[in-house]
Length: 539
Picture (cartoon, rainbow, N blue to C red):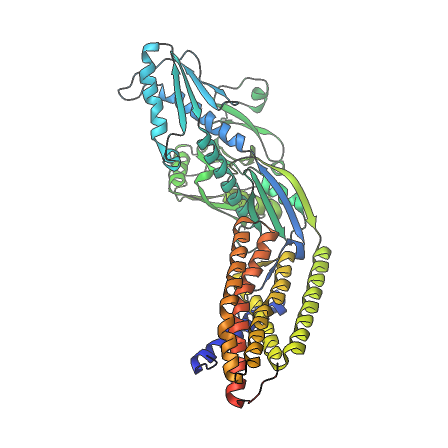
């Protein structure tokens, strides 16, 4: 059991050396890493919000708004279903469908009660169509008829589905806005049913972060109506289907009257980039998907010489005149953009619109000084605990205590290397997990060494006693570490923020400590015993 063949020995040593190799980048600044050879790993352990400083936001998603918007759309859809189409005749309504936000119910009143059955059949199409019914495994709406009155109510399951989707989609939009390149270590995760936690290490301006997040980001391309002036619209002389929209602040003052229905909507934009404008200043270049490219091409072909307005969150950011048909599926937005505004606007367009309003419940800015203090305190605790454990093992177990200490150093190196490879974020609780792992790492060696002492006391020869000690202690070591690893997995799955950071380092530490304490020390002890073959062993 103490013998290792060449391949096993080489594998153990190689694993430890790989841990050293992946730990080395953490001792260099990012600028210095760029100058290292390309074969060297460049990944580092990322410091969390509590160590690096940054911004913390707790946001609430207005899920009621999402459901109300869905039901408002349902009201329009029901009204559309009552109109004639194909061989279907018109079903006359006593009044426009009414929506009750308190009960999440749309009510229709049929003028001719004989048409109620036909109306119910058409309304049933809503439950039979779309992905929502499939996702819920049933009907998202309950339809009840009482004479000429028909109530369509969203089920509790559908409300939960839309609320959960709104939170999930909001997280994705927020992530694209804060970290469009995916290079920042931003932590965005749900809390409860309708809240989102945003932690941005290194970003010490929560107000700017909040402004970027809270922009709705709704982009639309509208046809300008030149027949109605802004003065006429302000005086109430505006025809149906028109809206008065002001210019954005950087475009100056004034307003334009636009056709209310957009020609192309922001969900058809695939990409948007901030670029220098060849004529001076900055511009936003955008690309449509196939559907948007067709609609944009048709619109520009049919309206050469007309103005069209690009509207972002209810403000006109540009209103160019169509010079020629644009059929390539791409275009550019020019205006009096500042460098910050053009970058922020491009990010908003690219990330898409928020599905619901986000309200900031709590915001904090964690200073870098606090993070540096935490790092120093954690490092001090780590060093003190490390020295204490090393000294204890040498005093109690002599040569074998030295082997345990070598394994302990290898354990810390492997933890650091694993965190670097995974790109994990190290938090203050994570440091606590490493300190705890150092204390736990020698538990396995204590079990093994005490078992060896018992075997030596029973009169066994050194090699036999050591082999027996490792063999008999294995079951206890395995049971203890498996239960700890399972607890770490549960904390990672159910916990959030600091709890997860603690769970990550604890889980990695459990795996590496079993390897170093049982395998590495056995390699060192076996190498000594098989080469020297001592007749007596003192522990």
